Length: 295
Ligand SMILES: [Fe+2]
Image 1 (tube, protein in one colour):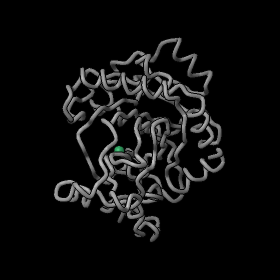
Image 2 (cartoon, helix red, strand yellow):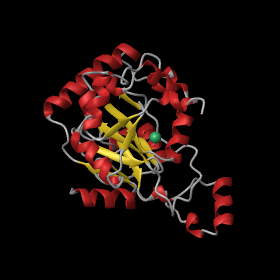
Image 3 (tube, protein in one colour):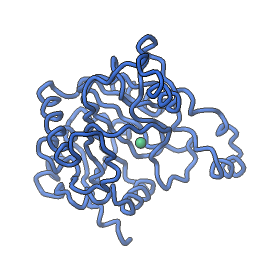
Image 4 (cartoon, rainbow, N blue to C red):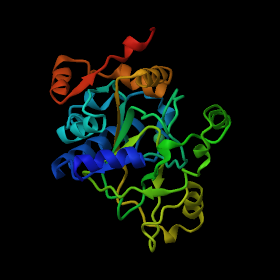
């Protein structure tokens, strides 16, 4: 996909996929490293990584074996282009997951976001580097198209409708989902306002049908024979990036309050000259999250 289409898709649908970013060697190295580290951290069974509260983890740049997953020209140029070529920031919110316990629920990850989703562009993205085939297998990412322009049902939504007289908020924008067809080497970028769900399931005979998470849970329990399996143990790298703005500062301040997010950043060592200057060459501005602590 050319960069103009990537940008258009991203701001219209709330996500975009960049294909074939990493070489086979990189994919293998990332997978092997994540498996080895992951098993050292949680053992070989599927575990709830959220319960770790970040203990024993660092950001992705702190691991030399994974650093080029983030410090990648194609990736960073694409994000920059999405944000009109303005500088993009990284503050250490990145992590890998291996063979994680299954969670399925529709949610978005924007925090302290009080702006109108129809009139503003949320300046923070998350990338997912899913290091296996999710086109022909299960366990990839489910994305709700255009849901970056909606807010959760509830009081906030009601207040917005009354205050801003925007009946568009009532449109069911969280129903049109797709299961991302990423393969090893691809990157999916989504806006933090975009609703999504993890561990998406594919049916054997209607491979491209995207079901709601509650239905997926039901089928997994009672009719697993009609589902496609996962290709491999699930190894994934996630990272957040943002354009400097009040929304980003609000988001970072929220990160500081969450042990699961802040602990790995505290354990990290990405604030060293070598990484800062390498990042700068690629147009990435490294922030020291501690500076936002007491402001
Ligand atoms: Fe999420």
